[in-house]
Length: 364
View (tube, rainbow, N blue to C red):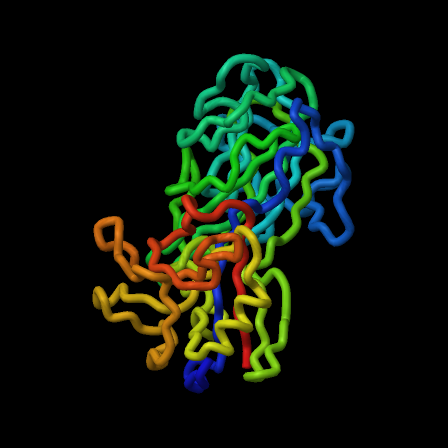
């Protein structure tokens, strides 16, 4: 890796996509997860007070706390509550009890609704049933436990990524409903239902008043950081590398810029070998900063550095898919082209790679 200009704060990045935010379904049959908050979690409701919440007008909420549960106080569908603090990427645990005919929802960032509804416990559910991403996607399985029974949602949510006013990656959600995986890393392309309009700003968590006395308890969350691990020091060039989470090349580059750098520039064999030895792993396809998005066929580093080294696989770059392969990945170790470069579309190569993927950035 060559020296990066001072205007870029001497920061470099490598990118991988996180496709499995937490382990596979916890149970084959619906069993509510009633675990208490882990150490360090942000407790939003512990059964005793509502200090973490405000009403829609930022005032004191008037939902009653009854037998350790926070109960919707219906007022013509206008009495929803939201967290006083904003949340970014997070893991959320919430338990809920739906009365007969009950209807509510949990709005992630106040934009994207995970439906709570008194749905049947057998049969196929739709996009307005319990566990649905409301109006967009039905749950993959019916994990409901029925009316007046405590149930659980465990959610991993990643906010949409923005470059200025332009969205470069959709919000994504994984949901375990009563310990059964019903959505796995699903892109949410727009706000849902009565959600706020999408935008680059942070958002709150909202519990919906939809006219019925749904109850909530044991609500807590943990941040899911973009920077997942590191630093790992490369003694050959003095750079420190970190693990970063992002959804695709454009989102990764936007996040890298926000953190003070760019996706990684690799301009020598030693750098390539070190990166692959330290970060290559089964199921990991590594984004790097090489792109011909601006001018087809003219690959440039996003850092602005000159191109002095390439490591294309045979036949690459081939610019398939109607000329949309404008971004560069390093094939993972299990691939027949392990360590070589491939031009790709602005997403993970799902047909080539499965499993969990990560991202890396480094600082001089």
